[in-house]
Figure 1 (cartoon, helix red, strand yellow):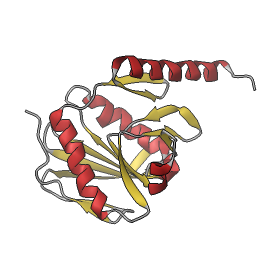
Figure 2 (tube, helix red, strand yellow):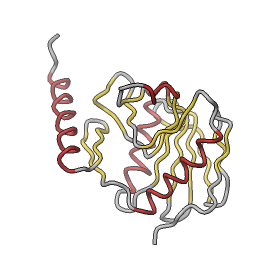
Figure 3 (cartoon, one colour):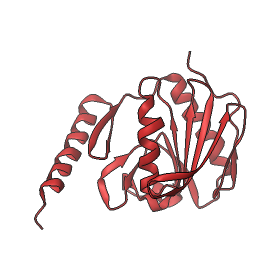
Length: 188
């Protein structure tokens, strides 16, 4: 099989991402052909992820599980991938050697807005997850104590959007679970 120039470029970019991640300890993603590097989460960011994980795990249906820092690819393009803070997908992923989750197996992705890289989570990833066909995207924002749940992806946009504040529960359609947001940390 002969690779076209864009395919070769993506393969080189994927290799560069893997090398940069290994050398720096930063988290690499390739979003629409752009290599993005993120530092590991700070304390409050990590606490919010852990709180969500702890609250979601016991209420998920048996066939689903929560995974932290696992990657999901764009359909038909494993060189374009995102690594949400948390994702809910088929429990079988936990028994595989794969590092990329098929977006068709993902029910929910969660991003906690970073203090230093907020535009990625609040703008870029909304469109990316909609394009990938992820049914629900929960964006938790410790900067101002709010959350947004995006649902019903169609033609690169989420059709549903519900906003709330920390302390207000989030009902996740499709999963039929409710996530309590009381006590989520706020950035100082």
